[in-house]
Length: 226
Image 1 (tube, one colour):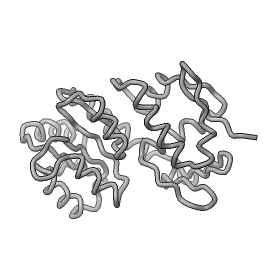
Image 2 (cartoon, one colour; image 1 turned 60 degrees about the vertical axis):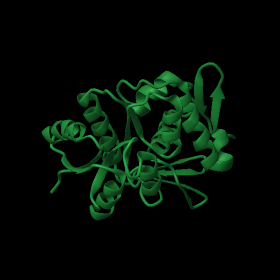
Image 3 (tube, helix red, strand yellow; image 1 turned 90 degrees about the vertical axis):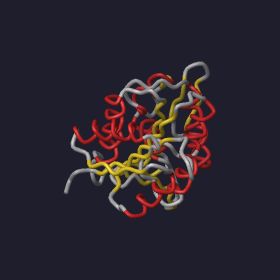
Image 4 (cartoon, rainbow, N blue to C red; image 1 turned 90 degrees about the horizontal axis):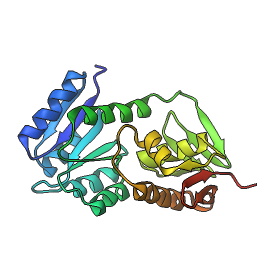
Protein backbone atom coordinates (compact mmCIF):
# COMPACT_ATOMS: atom_id res chain seq x y z
CA UNK A 1 0.00 0.00 0.00
CA UNK A 2 1.18 3.46 -0.92
CA UNK A 3 -1.10 5.12 1.63
CA UNK A 4 1.08 6.98 4.13
CA UNK A 5 0.38 6.33 7.80
CA UNK A 6 -0.11 9.15 10.32
CA UNK A 7 -0.07 8.53 14.08
CA UNK A 8 -2.52 10.87 15.86
CA UNK A 9 -1.96 11.13 19.62
CA UNK A 10 -4.48 13.00 21.78
CA UNK A 11 -6.40 12.08 24.94
CA UNK A 12 -9.55 13.73 23.53
CA UNK A 13 -11.41 11.20 21.38
CA UNK A 14 -13.36 13.97 19.65
CA UNK A 15 -10.14 15.71 18.61
CA UNK A 16 -8.65 12.46 17.28
CA UNK A 17 -11.79 11.80 15.23
CA UNK A 18 -11.78 15.33 13.79
CA UNK A 19 -8.15 15.07 12.68
CA UNK A 20 -8.61 11.50 11.43
CA UNK A 21 -11.65 12.43 9.34
CA UNK A 22 -9.77 15.20 7.55
CA UNK A 23 -6.66 13.08 7.00
CA UNK A 24 -8.52 10.01 5.70
CA UNK A 25 -10.45 12.25 3.34
CA UNK A 26 -7.07 13.15 1.79
CA UNK A 27 -6.07 9.50 1.46
CA UNK A 28 -3.89 9.04 4.54
CA UNK A 29 -3.96 5.99 6.77
CA UNK A 30 -4.48 6.97 10.42
CA UNK A 31 -3.70 5.11 13.63
CA UNK A 32 -4.63 6.57 17.01
CA UNK A 33 -3.34 6.67 20.58
CA UNK A 34 -5.13 8.13 23.60
CA UNK A 35 -2.11 8.72 25.85
CA UNK A 36 1.68 8.84 25.73
CA UNK A 37 2.30 5.24 26.75
CA UNK A 38 -0.06 3.96 24.06
CA UNK A 39 1.63 6.28 21.56
CA UNK A 40 5.02 4.70 22.24
CA UNK A 41 3.54 1.21 21.87
CA UNK A 42 2.04 2.19 18.50
CA UNK A 43 5.28 3.83 17.40
CA UNK A 44 7.33 0.70 18.07
CA UNK A 45 4.68 -1.60 16.63
CA UNK A 46 4.18 0.24 13.33
CA UNK A 47 7.41 0.72 11.37
CA UNK A 48 5.80 2.63 8.49
CA UNK A 49 4.68 5.77 10.35
CA UNK A 50 5.34 8.77 8.08
CA UNK A 51 4.44 11.53 10.55
CA UNK A 52 3.18 12.00 14.13
CA UNK A 53 0.60 14.53 15.32
CA UNK A 54 1.22 14.76 19.06
CA UNK A 55 -0.71 16.51 21.83
CA UNK A 56 1.29 18.01 24.70
CA UNK A 57 -1.00 17.55 27.71
CA UNK A 58 -1.79 13.84 28.14
CA UNK A 59 -2.07 11.34 31.01
CA UNK A 60 0.59 8.72 31.85
CA UNK A 61 3.24 10.27 29.58
CA UNK A 62 3.03 13.80 28.19
CA UNK A 63 3.94 14.92 24.67
CA UNK A 64 7.37 16.22 25.70
CA UNK A 65 8.36 12.80 27.08
CA UNK A 66 7.03 11.03 23.99
CA UNK A 67 8.95 13.40 21.73
CA UNK A 68 12.19 12.90 23.69
CA UNK A 69 11.93 9.12 23.48
CA UNK A 70 11.07 9.09 19.76
CA UNK A 71 13.98 11.42 18.97
CA UNK A 72 16.46 8.98 20.51
CA UNK A 73 15.82 6.57 17.62
CA UNK A 74 13.93 8.38 14.86
CA UNK A 75 13.73 11.62 12.87
CA UNK A 76 10.09 11.02 11.86
CA UNK A 77 8.40 14.44 11.48
CA UNK A 78 6.40 15.53 14.53
CA UNK A 79 3.64 18.15 14.65
CA UNK A 80 2.93 19.20 18.23
CA UNK A 81 -0.57 20.25 19.36
CA UNK A 82 -1.11 22.37 22.44
CA UNK A 83 -3.95 24.22 24.14
CA UNK A 84 -1.48 26.61 25.78
CA UNK A 85 -0.20 29.47 23.65
CA UNK A 86 3.01 29.73 25.67
CA UNK A 87 6.12 30.90 23.83
CA UNK A 88 8.35 28.93 26.19
CA UNK A 89 6.46 25.76 25.29
CA UNK A 90 6.94 26.49 21.62
CA UNK A 91 10.67 27.07 22.00
CA UNK A 92 11.00 23.91 24.11
CA UNK A 93 9.26 21.96 21.36
CA UNK A 94 11.70 23.16 18.74
CA UNK A 95 14.64 22.40 21.06
CA UNK A 96 13.38 18.80 21.25
CA UNK A 97 13.19 18.50 17.47
CA UNK A 98 9.50 19.25 16.85
CA UNK A 99 8.93 20.15 13.19
CA UNK A 100 5.70 22.13 13.48
CA UNK A 101 3.82 23.63 16.41
CA UNK A 102 0.03 24.13 16.23
CA UNK A 103 -2.05 25.81 18.96
CA UNK A 104 -5.61 24.71 19.69
CA UNK A 105 -8.13 25.61 18.41
CA UNK A 106 -6.84 25.20 14.87
CA UNK A 107 -8.18 24.79 11.37
CA UNK A 108 -8.12 21.10 10.38
CA UNK A 109 -7.57 22.15 6.78
CA UNK A 110 -4.43 24.09 7.73
CA UNK A 111 -3.21 21.13 9.80
CA UNK A 112 -3.65 18.81 6.81
CA UNK A 113 -1.88 21.36 4.60
CA UNK A 114 1.09 21.34 6.97
CA UNK A 115 1.14 17.54 7.01
CA UNK A 116 1.19 17.53 3.21
CA UNK A 117 3.92 20.16 3.05
CA UNK A 118 6.20 18.24 5.41
CA UNK A 119 5.69 14.90 3.67
CA UNK A 120 6.11 16.47 0.25
CA UNK A 121 9.45 17.94 1.24
CA UNK A 122 10.61 14.73 2.92
CA UNK A 123 9.65 12.48 0.02
CA UNK A 124 9.96 14.83 -2.92
CA UNK A 125 13.72 15.22 -3.04
CA UNK A 126 15.44 14.13 -6.23
CA UNK A 127 17.51 11.02 -5.70
CA UNK A 128 21.21 11.54 -6.11
CA UNK A 129 20.91 15.26 -5.39
CA UNK A 130 24.01 15.83 -3.26
CA UNK A 131 25.51 19.27 -2.89
CA UNK A 132 28.73 20.50 -1.30
CA UNK A 133 28.60 23.86 0.46
CA UNK A 134 32.06 24.68 1.73
CA UNK A 135 32.66 21.17 3.02
CA UNK A 136 29.09 20.61 4.20
CA UNK A 137 27.75 17.68 2.18
CA UNK A 138 23.95 17.66 1.89
CA UNK A 139 22.25 14.52 0.54
CA UNK A 140 18.70 15.74 -0.03
CA UNK A 141 17.29 12.35 -1.02
CA UNK A 142 18.56 10.62 2.11
CA UNK A 143 18.14 13.68 4.36
CA UNK A 144 21.75 13.35 5.50
CA UNK A 145 24.33 16.04 6.25
CA UNK A 146 28.02 15.22 6.59
CA UNK A 147 31.09 17.24 7.54
CA UNK A 148 34.50 15.62 7.07
CA UNK A 149 32.70 12.35 6.28
CA UNK A 150 30.99 12.43 9.68
CA UNK A 151 27.18 12.60 9.88
CA UNK A 152 25.62 15.65 11.54
CA UNK A 153 22.47 14.84 13.50
CA UNK A 154 19.87 17.42 12.39
CA UNK A 155 16.14 17.53 13.02
CA UNK A 156 13.82 17.75 10.02
CA UNK A 157 13.41 21.52 10.36
CA UNK A 158 17.13 22.10 10.91
CA UNK A 159 17.82 20.14 7.71
CA UNK A 160 15.23 22.16 5.79
CA UNK A 161 16.62 25.42 7.15
CA UNK A 162 20.19 24.51 6.18
CA UNK A 163 19.06 23.43 2.70
CA UNK A 164 17.20 26.71 2.23
CA UNK A 165 20.27 28.70 3.31
CA UNK A 166 22.51 26.77 0.92
CA UNK A 167 20.06 27.13 -1.98
CA UNK A 168 20.16 30.90 -1.40
CA UNK A 169 23.89 31.26 -0.73
CA UNK A 170 25.02 34.88 -0.66
CA UNK A 171 21.45 36.23 -0.49
CA UNK A 172 20.23 38.21 2.51
CA UNK A 173 17.09 36.49 3.84
CA UNK A 174 14.60 38.20 6.13
CA UNK A 175 13.08 36.24 8.98
CA UNK A 176 9.66 36.61 7.36
CA UNK A 177 10.95 35.10 4.11
CA UNK A 178 12.56 32.21 5.98
CA UNK A 179 9.31 31.51 7.87
CA UNK A 180 7.28 31.57 4.64
CA UNK A 181 9.63 29.25 2.78
CA UNK A 182 10.77 26.81 5.46
CA UNK A 183 7.70 26.64 7.72
CA UNK A 184 5.12 27.04 4.92
CA UNK A 185 1.59 28.40 4.99
CA UNK A 186 0.32 30.73 7.71
CA UNK A 187 2.84 30.16 10.46
CA UNK A 188 1.98 32.40 13.40
CA UNK A 189 5.38 32.35 15.03
CA UNK A 190 7.90 35.10 15.54
CA UNK A 191 11.59 35.75 15.01
CA UNK A 192 12.58 33.71 18.06
CA UNK A 193 11.49 30.53 16.30
CA UNK A 194 14.09 31.08 13.57
CA UNK A 195 16.72 32.38 15.97
CA UNK A 196 16.39 29.23 18.10
CA UNK A 197 16.83 26.97 15.06
CA UNK A 198 19.78 28.97 13.74
CA UNK A 199 21.50 28.81 17.13
CA UNK A 200 21.15 25.02 17.27
CA UNK A 201 22.13 24.62 13.62
CA UNK A 202 25.30 26.69 14.05
CA UNK A 203 26.23 24.64 17.10
CA UNK A 204 25.78 21.33 15.26
CA UNK A 205 27.80 22.53 12.25
CA UNK A 206 30.77 23.39 14.47
CA UNK A 207 33.27 25.73 12.80
CA UNK A 208 31.18 25.73 9.63
CA UNK A 209 28.33 27.28 11.58
CA UNK A 210 30.13 30.56 10.92
CA UNK A 211 28.86 30.35 7.34
CA UNK A 212 25.47 31.49 8.67
CA UNK A 213 25.90 35.24 9.08
CA UNK A 214 23.54 37.39 11.12
CA UNK A 215 22.22 40.49 9.39
CA UNK A 216 21.18 42.68 12.28
CA UNK A 217 17.62 43.95 12.12
CA UNK A 218 16.77 41.74 9.16
CA UNK A 219 17.71 38.07 9.22
CA UNK A 220 20.52 35.84 7.98
CA UNK A 221 22.78 35.07 5.04
CA UNK A 222 24.64 31.86 4.24
CA UNK A 223 28.10 32.63 2.91
CA UNK A 224 31.00 30.21 2.64
CA UNK A 225 34.22 31.72 3.95
CA UNK A 226 37.04 32.14 1.48
